[in-house]
Amino acid sequence: MQTVVVWNPKGGVGKSTATVHIALAAELMGDGPALICDVDSQGSTADWHNFRQARELKGPGYAPLQIATLKSQIDQLDAAGAAYLFIDMKAGVGPNDDAILAQADRVLIPLNPKPADMLALNKQMPAIRKAGKPFTFLLSRCRHNLRTNSSTSAALGVLGHVVPALMYEREIYSDTFGHGLTAFELEPDGTAANDIRVVWLAFKQHLAGNN
Image (tube, rainbow, N blue to C red):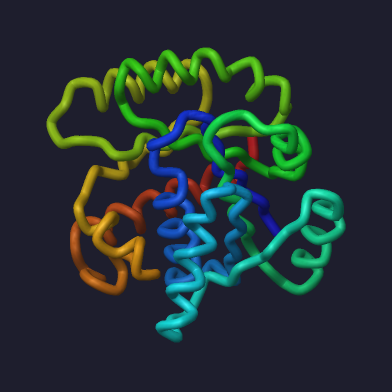
């Protein structure tokens, strides 16, 4: 099982949206079983899963992990046959960050292609390096036809892997999240769903390389 920690201490970068959409893409594209876990006190991803269960919609599964027994629980999920575990981290810096990052096979770092996000990331790079885990950047909440999309991607490429596909700012993400839905239910052949498929395929290659 590959454990992916979706991490960025800066809020508003699209961590929860990326977590649920990428995990569901893995399921729908035959790469599951995929599980999600929410360690954010706001519980947005957990709420999404509960809404989804109420609608009796399939996948991804939810793993309510506890920090004190994190490693053993992850080992049990692996033994049970899970293929991927996506852990949605909270915004800000917390006392459990190191313990969670220690269990990652790869850290996925969503961020917006904006100067403020790049400045915030620069402050967090020592913590990323200290964790000693492979990491991948994902540009999220992008707007079309902005030069900062390509310039930010190039700048991030100096620091590490960058998913060569963008998650654009789309109303369908906000319209569906609070109902336990995704772009895959509302517009399965739409632009947003296709974006996520491309993002997952590209990110899966990073996971396979794991470097």
